[in-house]
Length: 116
Image 1 (tube, rainbow, N blue to C red):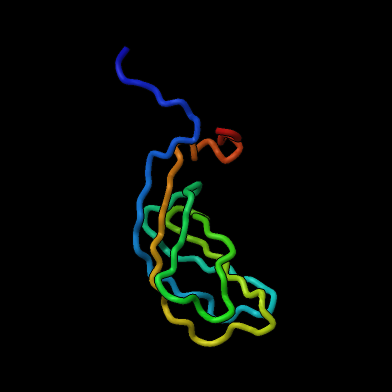
Image 2: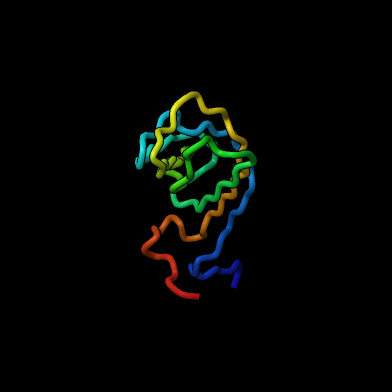
């Protein structure tokens, strides 16, 4: 039998680390969040993404969620859970980004395995 098959059991067929310079949201009010988008060539909806800042993130902000919201588009939810507003002109921060692309991402999250 020529070729082979790989069962759709949650295998990753793509894993890459890259560097991205991202500027956090300029103003996030008390107990609120803002989602910013950034162009990252090659991202696809369904990619699993981790961000690792290489410097301190702007005062009062944390990262709430990270996802590929469209092709070539990274969305980052900036969260301010403090009693003070985050304002000013934040500087760009260098991040190491790890992108995993599951082999069955095209089938949607509902088709991922639910156990090992």
